[in-house]
Image 1 (cartoon, rainbow, N blue to C red):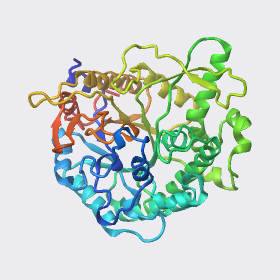
Image 2 (image 1 turned 180 degrees about the vertical axis):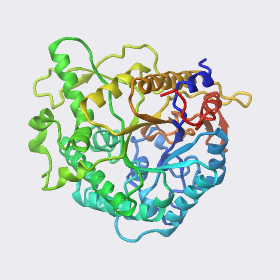
Image 3 (image 1 turned 135 degrees about the vertical axis):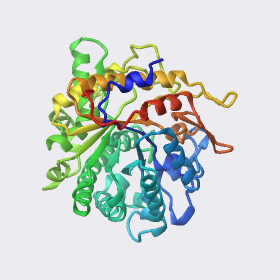
Length: 457
């Protein structure tokens, strides 16, 4: 086991160690205090969409256990908490009246963090689109981008004076491709045309959101959280090498390109540009507004080979086998070096601001035995990825913080409650929280910070 204090010595003294969650995954109270349904409420309640038809009605009951959960974060000794705000609590119909009780909840959350000396990193959108907006087409409709802008302005006007940082979106890859092309996430579309519209509308909403944040709070650091994929070719053959390049553009470039370079990737546009929605004058300039930081969510590499079937749709790739035999309980290959490869590659391709690792962690489903949870594989996973992060900092990359995913076990989207990512165990029948071995280890590490700048940079 890596000694957390020895690992800590490899990080600069102002490095931020935190934990992360998302509203729909932990809050529950899905009908309380004026909240109306999101697309995930509808999706969860449809047969065959989520494992066991699990839903977010109760989740970790965080909405009703806010104070004890904030005490838990404080007890872990971390410096920052990354959480998301539920749009259906703030503007329940997506447009129209603002729900004061929803804002009151996040007031209590942010004030509670401030009272405990914990930094507040808020995410405005973590997939829980108000269901009413599906009447206009949801993320395939430009109107949703403007609804998001108003929602962002509403939240920042109320909370922005006490936030330490804000992200517009979490993992647009998921809410675009996984939700509209692969059908795995809400709203469950399997349609390239819908996905391409969702792609541009989401990118536009991000830019409009940045503008809204800056108009309300010019000094609040605003960013975007991306689950970039480190793509690897299955072989050195020319077909697989070309497929890997297409995969990189399709899974990363369609977000990084517009945001950080002001353009969609050329190869992507030549293949699919004619099916994109109209890119109106000013759209790309809005999407390309400068950011103060960006967040990287990393779990596992993406290995691809060429799909040589006649007429295979761009990016014309197929999954390739894992190289490393170690997998987590959700089946994801463990490959810490890929995190380093990815950060180097993205910084080579784009001019990027300061980075935070906004999510990193592992699914292991150990339960409580004799009052303890021995999740050594999760501890090892986090330690290995933090070691790579320390290497990146020593190479000169501006990585400013790390947020473990997740603070606690929670609703794992299409997997329901059967997959556990927490460093704190949740017994869903009793809502009892039990800090896992990984949580205690991470706590020792986090307590070394902040400690004044030393020669770790």
